[in-house]
Structure formats: C-alpha cells, structure tokens
Length: 223
Ligand SMILES: C[S@@+](CC[C@H](N)C(=O)[O-])C[C@H]1O[C@@H](n2cnc3c(N)ncnc32)[C@H](O)[C@@H]1O
Image 1 (cartoon, rainbow, N blue to C red):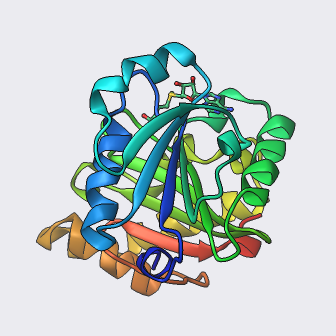
Image 2 (cartoon, rainbow, N blue to C red):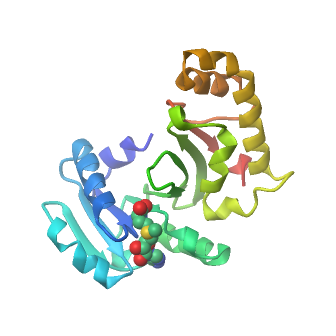
C-alpha cells in the first residue's frame, strides 16, 4: 500500500524518527527502501546527541543520522517512521508531535506512527497524510497470538487511553475477538487460516491489505 508513495516520490527521502540506542531500525529500513527505490535516502533522527554519535559507524551510501525532533531537523521526507517514540509523551504532546511531523511531510508523504513489542510480534500503527490520520493497522505474528484483543497494549498513544467500554476502538477489539472465536474451527489448520477467516467474518469496514496477521481499518471508524 505504501510502496507507491516511495516509487512515485520526486525526492525519495525517508526518516526514521527516534531510532533509539542503536541504529538497527534505520539500517533495516535503509535496506528495505533501497530494494524499492535504489536512490532513496534514509536519515535517522534522534533527539539524543549521544545516540546520533553512536550511529556514526552505520553511516553508508544513502544512510545518515542527525540530531532533531518532531521538526525533522528541517528535512522534508516522503515517509516518516516513528515507532515507540510517542508512547513516552502525554496525549496532548503526542498530538502536537503528529501535527509538527505532518507539516514536515512532502505533499504526497505519509507518517507511520505506532508501537510494537520488543520482538516485533505485536504492533499497531496509524498512517497519516499531511491532512491527518487515515488508517489504523493492527499486526501480529499470528503463530504467537492468543486473542486479537491482546494487541490493545500496543495501541498508539492517540487510542490507548480511549480503549474503554463503548468507545469505537474498544468495539473493534471486541469484534475482532468475536470473529476470532467464530473462526476457531479453522485453527485446526493453523492461526494463519484462522486470522484469514476472522478477517472474512469481521463486521467492520476494512481497507488495504488483509495479509497474514495484518488488518487495516479506516481511522474514522476507530477514532
Ligand atoms: C523506545 S526508543 C524507540 C527506538 C526505536 N524507534 C524502536 O522502535 O525500537 C525511543 C527513542 O525516541 C527518542 N525520542 C524521543 N522523543 C523524540 C523526539 N521528539 N524526536 C526524536 N527522537 C525522540 C528517544 O531518545 C529514544 O531513543
């Protein structure tokens, strides 16, 4: 779904915001985007200068690092990845961070803002354009998934405090569990089959891919 954003970009600049103690996510992102756009540049941006210094050894053709925050060190990327960054902010500051990053995007750019667990088996992210949030994606390594609602702990800051009975995102997670339970017989063939059956039986508007362990819904249905 996002591949086209990168392939169509006049300036294929990608930012990994808040890459952390090691530059590994930026290094992996660089490899992946270069497979799609060999002329792409990835810049890892960190607010912590020591982490920028520590990434110096990873600098290579098309991969560099800079100190900065939500203002993106003055860069104008077509894609921003910001994972496990906004969790440490309160809701208002996270919303302000969204806005500042959206304003820094190229006209057709996207911001992917989300959280995942340490080993990447559970993740949730919001895809935003310059105009605002578009979709919520939930993703799981389904072989390790007990129930879809266990993804709740990975909801982005904008939703996690709103996951209470009666709220749209709470209804989505309940509906996922209902459809997951209804698909239990498919579990005989493995959780991938069960996930696919859950998606097929889900009474919720879905957009984009329904790949193994990944489900994307329109933002207005959960906001
Ligand atoms: C938990 S680590 C996330 C590491 C990595 N993104 C990941 O998903 O594993 C959060 C990082 O975000 C950085 N950070 C926090 N606020 C930031 C901001 N406004 N701009 C850039 N980096 C920020 C912190 O210094 C920290 O290194």
